[in-house]
Image (tube, rainbow, N blue to C red; front, side, top):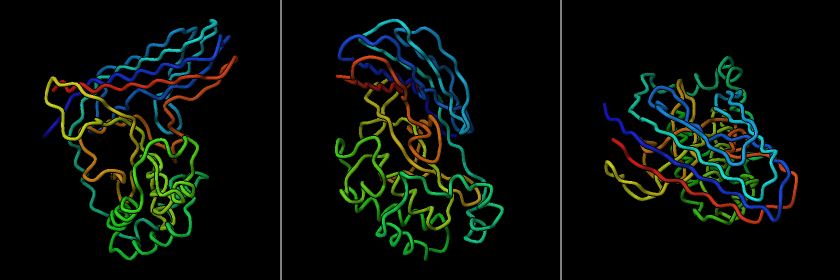
Length: 282
């Protein structure tokens, strides 16, 4: 069975336009441990830091709540993880439409069938989903819909904001991975297919890193759909979700798994710098 071990360093530096007296934040930067992914080491360093507390939220993500009560003009966060990814075959056969639309399934997974304000699809996406719904299985429908959305949207950073909705993204026909994920989720949910948002990391360079090689990484988003078991699908990039994809958390949409969220008392933010580095260890 193939496996791959990575060290991921995620650095965030926030600079304010003057002195901030206090800040409170929630960080979701610790990869989950589950079949196919083992987090061997994880630490988060924050400067300045008054106190912190780590807990698991409703969706199963590891959350670090932290507060800095020392006056500061810069907040620095460095999350370092060592993660081993391995192939984790899904033994459950692809379920049919009846299994997905079964009343018990729809009730149990209702949180991932209901639309959120971010995922409500425009009429054109709902129509694309209806066309894909003619496929023989939910999984085939998801792949068909994903291909159509991927062909219609152009990947372009800076066009959308972190609060963008699927409808806004579709209007511009441009966006980033989280936008494509939201559009795809909205389409699948119109078909009654349970689907959830996945937040994580992936290598930013084309191709695979060699052992001992380091390279840039990036925050990434993909989805998982349920058709008897949860199955990953990356609607932004061609190919399978593989050993370079590292899961941080899952939820209904981006809001459930935002890497960084909080508040502060003081002047506004003038600069936010993000750097993610992947090192393949084995």
